[in-house]
Amino acid sequence: MDYPAPVQKLIDELRRLPGIGPKSAQRIAFHLLRGTREDAERLGGSISRLMDGIRLCRICNAITDAETCAQCTDPGRSDRTICVVEEPHDILAVERTRDFKGRYHVLHGALSPLQGIGPDELKAHGLIERVRLGGVDEVILATSPTVEGEATAAWLARLLKPLGARVTRIAMGVPVGSDLEWSDEVTIAKALEGRRDY
Amino acid sequence: MPPIASDALVLKTSKLGETSKLVILLTRERGKVRAVAKGARGTRSRYQSALEPLSEVRVGLYGRQGTELFRLGQCDLVRSAFPAGGRGLETSLTLSYFAELLDAFAQEGEAEDAVYRLAIAVVRAAEEGRDIVALARYLEAWLLRLAGLYPQLDRCAACGNALPSGPLAYHHVTHGFVCASCGPASGPVLQKPVREFLREVFATAPSAVTTPPEAARVLESFHQNLIRRHLERDLRSYRVMHDVARGTA
Ligand SMILES: [Zn+2]
Ligand SMILES: [Zn+2]
Image (cartoon, rainbow over all chains, first blue to last red; front, side, top):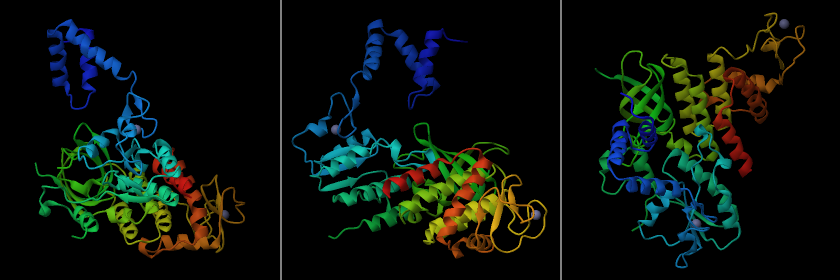
């Protein structure tokens, strides 16, 4: 049986969302049909307003609704340290630690030769300029612990070091709460490499 | 149904759905295959670092005879390419290029032992820290030759007579090197050291060759032309490799 066109259209759109399969899409569509017009309009409104006013921070490329994001404008944070991440949501992961009080820079990806993502496809230019302008003591490279994340870090280090900033890489290794026995040799080798004195 | 067990080299992975990865493997038993690795993303993935490009692994593949998409079962890391990539930016980017080159030349579902052994030998030589530029020319030359695309080095492509020692003159129309009476060359002329390097490439293991700088430069464009003519497209990683080199020079 075919659904009426507007229902089918909604199901098709919902299915494109992450984590939504055909069954869930159907369930959500029929849930909305059972609800009131106001409920549906409120949801529709917030989706259509989502893109209005959302932009990338002029300084760090984080997602914001102002010209500069909250982290870039917070006077309680230091300009002397910049933490470089691949994606905007990585900022939230670092923020959850509540330990980092510096600024951020979002690359919007990592060097990925196999996907055709090179320097021109990443937003690294602003980072270089920020460091070039001075006042930055340390750049922390918090790209993914993958071959591509490593290549991205190596590439950035090569661009940033001549500018005089200290460039560091986050440690990689055994996840907290896991069993050493089940970690593969690369993970353990990286953990040993990043060991520190007590 | 028991899985197909095989040694394999991971060529590429891409995101699939919320938690999985689509993996392209060069297997010893079945040539190039595609497989879904369920739950391969996220910190609790049982695959850990085994699906990083150019990892040498031992896999179990589930799927019917003739399937185009397998399900990846166990995938044990035999040798990681992580240390090789850690040798520096050039090596890391060139390894990506190796993976794309192998993906482009390997046949799907068709075991090619020579290609598999070549791939493993080149990746291992990179890990040992051999000159990455020499290895790139080595891999290109051999993949082209195994695909029947490398011009003969000792016979004229036009008349079949033995080519005298000395420079090799390439002739576009015959897609090969030609002798003086069949020439002149319409393509590049490979000087004696380049020819000597090629002779070495086709006679020794990748860990044993070293490229003279001139040969590296001349052969890079010569090989790229042969590769492009065959694939009828540019390799993405090749462009990225050069963009990075230009930006960091
Ligand atoms: Zn910002
Ligand atoms: Zn001839």
